[in-house]
Image (cartoon, rainbow, N blue to C red; front, side, top):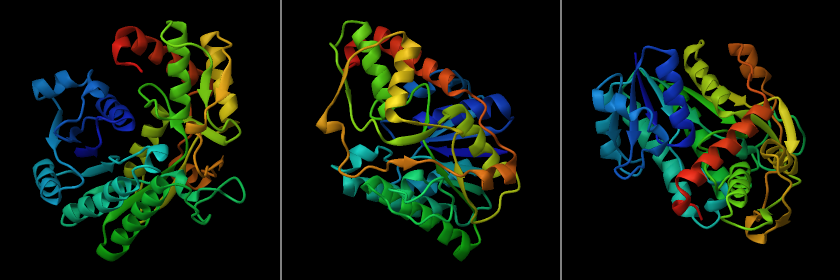
Length: 328
């Protein structure tokens, strides 16, 4: 079997590649852009160099021809479409780029895959629900996207389901809720907190920790549980056009996440709200009902929240020590 991962060098893509290397005997093809940094897949690059199960193809969601070539060269049985402009906060100042990459890029990829028999996973987001009116949120909840990023994911979500219905493609859509862990980008709240804690410890910045909206409610799952779920989406009786919420079973406020990170680090630093970290509109009730996916696959989150927070702190401590000249 052959699996194509778009966005393999990203946070989730790199963890998915590690999972597939460890848990399957598949050949894995990672789609990267010409200038994609390979830091996140550094432990896997030797496999690429040896030609051992893992290879890279160069393509861009903005370029239809490159996608067509990548699909032709990889001949995938499974496709995990993870590549995206994935930063909600950034999307407020880069709305056009976000919409172009995430909506039209998904259209271009699915067009390239139309003549294949691949089973396809399109990664949507819980952000499509936006400011939910009630929780927990199930798959029938109305869309109320609260950022250009969320709007772009709502578009990709609907495009994927349309292609499944119109062209008979075996496409599964997931709406993943908050997921985090090692290699999480520092534009995301919990990783930003962990990075700042590590920098204060190392004397590279002074207190306080800069924060945004600490009252926003989140349900957190470890990225390693998330990629296991993605694998099961495509391998446990995939139903064309199916849509699933996926998320953790531990809910807390963003303030609770900060407290958990400080506890994991053994710190008690002061913090203050920084206006630049506040979204114009916040998706503030992100608590999922995942019963549909759990009933279909038997998946359950396994990694405790506390372990995820410890891992995140240790990751940033190592990053600050090893690459302090790169850290702002």
